[in-house]
Length: 434
Image 1 (cartoon, one colour):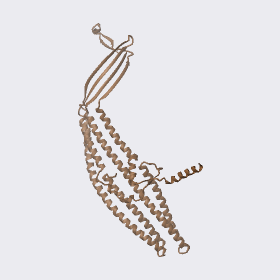
Image 2 (cartoon, rainbow, N blue to C red; image 1 turned 135 degrees about the vertical axis):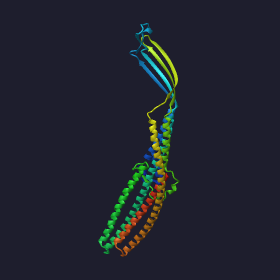
Image 3 (tube, rainbow, N blue to C red; image 1 turned 120 degrees about the vertical axis):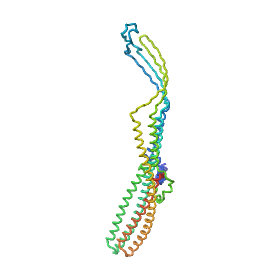
Image 4 (cartoon, helix red, strand yellow; image 1 turned 60 degrees about the horizontal axis):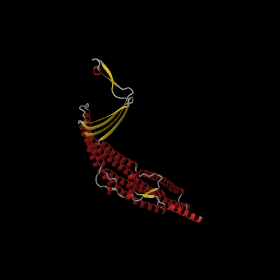
């Protein structure tokens, strides 16, 4: 039994090494953010709230049934003066008479139904357009979050690639230091030459530590955007994504900023109609049934009285102190402002798209140049290393070729990120970030 327990513990221990963290590529990150990102979720809650407001206003068109109950005890029954001659008194005199009984219990049921309220209809139309505005704003929020997510993901790719280059350069530098030590021991070079290589190695080591820290910070920020904690064990796919173009996702122009202004334009028209509708009356139907029970404790007298009536109620503001007139003027100013802003935004969008397309072309050419420079730098570095080993060049020339190679490597990474950034900007302008 003891041996069996040991085997079980051993199997559990070995299986723990087989548990791998989930690997997330860009597509998986975007899907997770779509459901788990707090900012996106809150934007969709705003859309749901707008829909609920429409339901609340539409319920005002339905009939309302109201019940009211009242219990009243008259400690002193109120009285009223009547002419004395009614009670057999002299003309010109008055007599105080009490009406009612000490206890009164009343129950009332009333039905109200709006028959005609043009302002309410205009308000519902306004809320429906407001819901469209909420949906467009939610789309803008979603695009902005995914824009930041993609940008951060590519920054992580760049940091990872730079880190890989630095670590490869560290390996090469360690080999060069070993060779230099051998040459120093053989009195072929002075100690200063070895010190120069060690200084360069320390610089590379410092760059490595900085890039590792930046990589961890970027990964934590990505985790936050996709809705997981920094303690969750996941890995991000760090190879190849930055080399893939984003422009295959472009499917025409779907500018949400323009759609938002167009919705505001429709909202302005509906608001103007609502102001005009306020000149019309509101017509309502109501029906009431009441039952009142009157009771006098002294002689146990009790009597119930029924009552019922129906009616039409008309509310019509004949003069409002020019309130609607001034609201119409404000609405007219807003209409002109929105029209100008919409026209300018369309022209600005056209210019921005042309500039973004041009920037993609420029960054594509820049990437090609950077790649050619990297090939040449690698060739020069290999030749410099060989020449140094042959004693043809100094360590300064060798270190310069190493620095030029690292700079060329960095330029390629930066060029890739800038190209993807330019493509991402074009997708954002055209509303095609999915």
